[in-house]
Every structure is written in structure tokens, then in C-alpha cells.
Image (tube, rainbow, N blue to C red; front, side, top):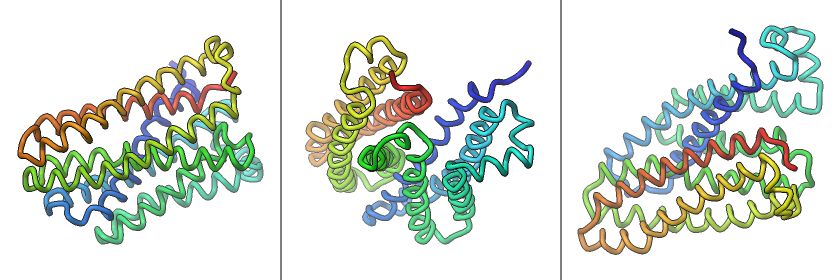
Length: 285
């Protein structure tokens, strides 16, 4: 049974984006939440140790699948002449930088916890920015590339921060810690949501001109609608956590319900990353 590189690229891209989002979100959470309990901090450190190698391996596999798809097969992707031609193409410098960053993500596992979080935060930001030159945004103007970078960075800070937030809610010192942690995370998430909305609309407008008819007739539009629906569901849960659960947690109530809500928000976030991965591999109408 022959495997199609293009068919394999989508799930690998999904895994890579999910790992990369966790890498940025967990590193940012670790550095910006010094009040987190020791158990929550250790759990976040363990998450970073796993996310770094996962980002590296999935990223290397994804680059190989992209090259195999362009070269016409897995074996061709290892041909020295094809590799040389690829790295001499306009995508070559971007791919070479990405290779170095992926290796750095995996190598950071040996760094001390505090330094590891700082290194991985820088590496994750660089990988997400580098990604702009490998997708649809690369065909647009500088403003579209900037909008894409802000879009994915904001999404990674929000969605990628949900796993360590869940650790902090489960392994903290009860309602007082949970209230402080959720309050700080919520402030960051609200800013991230505003950026996601503005930059997402900019990206759609630049690609399809807000043509409802063109979107409705295309696979791109269907996937975009799915992504928007998942995002709206996440936003509803985040609003519940911020305006309903958080005041109750301050009073010592609803902590278990808050944990369940954050867990569901995380599941929706992973699904949203999958929709984004599919969207990036689908030509706009």
C-alpha cells in the first residue's frame, strides 16, 4: 500500500502545530505565572520537556513530507540534487532556518527549567513567525504576513496556555490560587482574542475579499466556517470561565466545574488547530 505524502502531511501538520502552540503557551505561562504552586510548576516543566522534542520531530517530518510532495515521492525527497535545488529555491533559507530552530527546540530539553522556558519561548515565537513564509501569507503583502504572525502568536498564547492552566487549577492550593491564576490568564486571553479576531478578518479579507458566495462554494469556506464555529464555542467557554466561574471560585465554589470547562476549552482548541492546519493546506477560492 503506497502512502501519499500530501495525505500524510495534514495530520503531521496538525500534530506539529499543536506541539508548537503548547511550546509557546506553556513557556509563556511558566514565565508569567510565578505564583503557580510548585506542583503546577513542575508539571508545566515536564510539559515543556515533552513539547520541545515533539515539536522537533513533527516539524522535521512535516518538512520532509512537503519536500516529498514537491519532489514526487519519499525517495526523491532524499535525492542530493533535489535537496540542493530545494535549499537554493526561495523557500530554501526559510526551511534552513526552520531546521535550526527545530533542533534548538529539541536540544533545549537539557537546559535548566528557568532557562529552558526562556529559550523555548524565543524558539516557539521564531518558528511561528518563520511559518508565515511557508503558507498562504507568503504570497501576500507585508501587512498580510504581519497579520498572520500576530494571529498565530495570539492563538498559541491562548490555546497553548490551556494545558498549564489546567495543571495549575488541578494542582494548586485551592480556590485562592485558582482565582489569581485564572484572573491573570484571562487578562492575557482577552487581549489574544481581540488580536485573533482582528487579524483573522484581515487575512480572510485579503484572500477572498469577504465574498460570501466564493466562500460558500469552496472547501476553503467550509473549513473556515468550521474553524469559526469552534472558535465561537471556545469564546463562549472562556466568557463563562471569566464572568461566571471566576467570581464563584473566589467564594470557594465551582472549582471542579471550572476545571471541566477549561478541559473542554482545550479539546475545542485542539480541534481548532486541526481546522487551521487543514485551512493552511487548502487553496483560497
